Image (cartoon, rainbow, N blue to C red; front, side):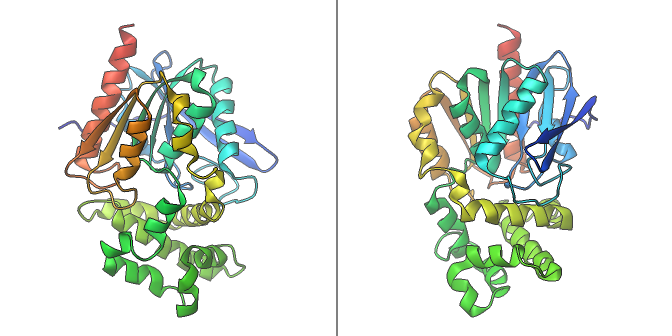
Length: 319
């Protein structure tokens, strides 16, 4: 069973202006002459973590991480204005050009898989290959599954009760909208309380076995606020995507090799997401991890992701 590579630090840090409001934090780690890879974190609004550098052999990869608009070390924190999926795709392309990268590997999980797929469908000529985990297609049915009663609530009824009990009975008819209103309201304490409960619901459903590390990270006040505000902002706007956009545009991935890694017991993004993507994307390989849920921190997922990054690095090293 493969485990994460040893901790490393960036050799370069960049602060890039994006639009009229945002500054994007970008870092580079590993081998400056290695195979370029861009790490796309989840959420939207989750931000990067030092452990995210450790999925890649630092002797083989030029590892690029960035915090998407409004989260992590990007500023302003939890900002919703000028924060949409097309603008994130534009940020990715800006980073590629700024770093003078011709083609790169796209590595993303959960919302990171969504963003990676949309970027690859927009700029397929710049994508060497994709390594994607916990596929999130951002269809209305996917949002309903996790944020309305009758989906994930049936598997985690105890956690669901904690999630909806934060709202008044009248607010529970439109759960997503009610959380959005609280998270964008003027009451700072109400925003903080809603953000923590929102993040707890996601963290407690993310792993097959309870994982205190995942819970602690997502419920940290800085992370929880950007995660909850930006997720509700995106989900209230259908993630700024056309209905079923990713599957409809799967033909644009033709010729791009991809490895899809998905936990069998993923409750946040059910396996059907990955299975339908694989069927529509002929040059993809689907790996179903039999003892895992959604999170990238589960041992089986870590093993599969590092096996994939090693295989991709050696493939292009030998060409």
